[in-house]
Image (tube, rainbow, N blue to C red; front, side):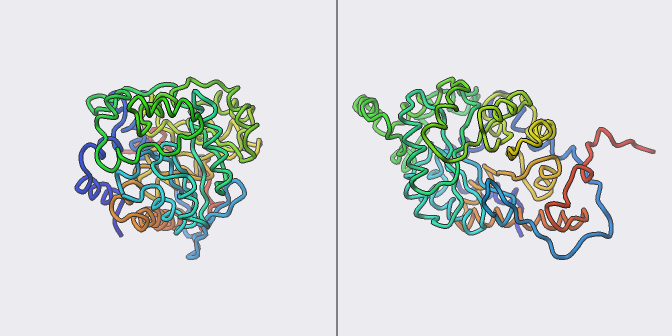
Length: 374
């Protein structure tokens, strides 16, 4: 079975540099991007010997829905750069594995078409709190009508992080890098503010790249979440939580779940790895009923087990799903998820766990706490 590194290498060989750079890049010196993966390697296992069962159950329940695996697909923009069917294929791949796919509001396929492509899938809709509330409301209510199960609000993007020498510093440079079918599709789900959208198209921004970019950089406040709750009955998930204080604020405004995330190292460079802050955030919201998920840096099944041990109920992968998508569409996405599933099961067995409920913090220790006896 291939590893996720194999998928990434295949994607590098197959995808044009401009879209690979967009997917793979981080901000600043890419410290946070690198730390997201490195931090997992600093965590070591303390296995329970001779207590594993050959039957391993990794099914889970998130926001009231049963999933086959505790691993879902994080939201990523511009998926048509990896495969012509873009988000539709990703949704189908997640559906094949009986798990969650979060669709980006910067997707290049209509919300309704993604829902039709995976009628039995568990789909969540990501959105920003746009400058014009009509755009947010339109995205959210169309997703609800189409059968999506939750709304994921990205709360860590009041502006765009500095992405050095990659061509993605700002709207104009970003647009210049887009090519072919990716540019032709544009951001099709911006439909709410009809009058302003018409003006944007008349100005030459016919695919709404500049408009969507500007709309998402709104510097929202917590009060906006209170408003959002009035326009949808779907549960709200706050994505981009990295501190205990913000986790408590998310609970206070009525979030049903939070995603501990540093945006894949694509926003504020110098943030800690998401796995490093996960335990204290999980502790801070314990007993509130708010579920805790994590993304960032997960590249194998042992990473998944470490995240579950440190307090995550569920994990999400972003870039690895794109690598699978570029390789073989829906089947490629499913193969990435199945690779993680297989690796998780093997790691669980070696750690003496037969089901997710067996996983706790006693299984993991930071390398700094290990004492060399030589």
